[in-house]
Image (cartoon, rainbow, N blue to C red):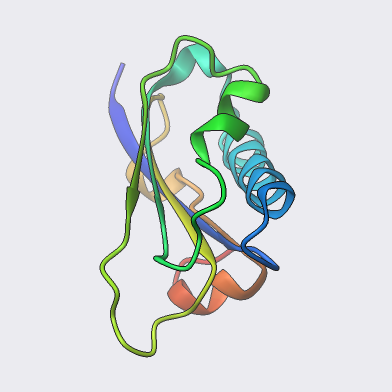
Length: 120
């Protein structure tokens, strides 16, 4: 089975635990749904947050929706001046029969502005 990487991002309303968990859960769920995936298809997920998000790990949201045995890692984005604030990003590695051109990358809310070329 081919391995593919799926990108995604969501801008959350505030640096609050509920906002980070809710936004991340929505992002992960949308990536899974749009790409016809189940947790067993997922090899690993790398989450990053902008430096202004410090109240919760986004990986916790993935654990809460069923990613119990999937390796997850959280990191902080580099603090580029003028970058879009309050963004959770992910790169999900999956096993899928879809070609690269069939993969649907997911950019939600204000994060759609990050990749207008591929935002769904």
